[in-house]
Image 1 (cartoon, rainbow, N blue to C red):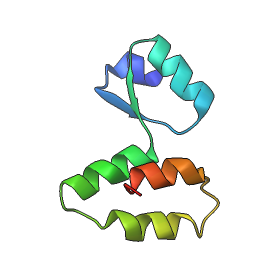
Image 2 (cartoon, rainbow, N blue to C red; image 1 turned 180 degrees about the vertical axis):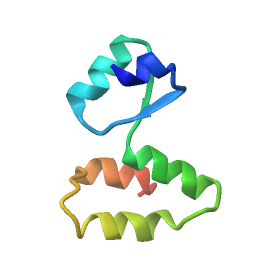
Image 3 (cartoon, rainbow, N blue to C red; image 1 turned 90 degrees about the horizontal axis):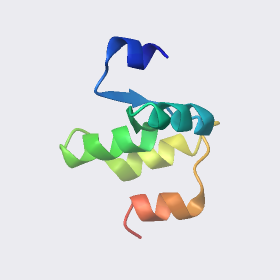
Image 4 (cartoon, rainbow, N blue to C red; image 1 turned 135 degrees about the vertical axis):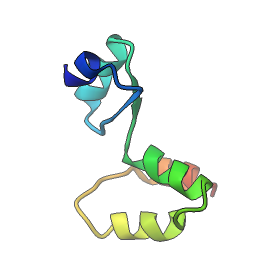
Length: 72
């Protein structure tokens, strides 16, 4: 796995199997929503606006996950 070989701090991955493999190797993983949430926390973007735009794409996020992310 390239992330392990490069000794990265984190790996951005949304794929469930890829996430599982990385975690088994002790690699910290973060997904697209985690990246967006962190950027919003830093004041770099509007999380609600980004979530709305994501919903117009093929990116899938479950309704409950989205509600939790947005604090609803």
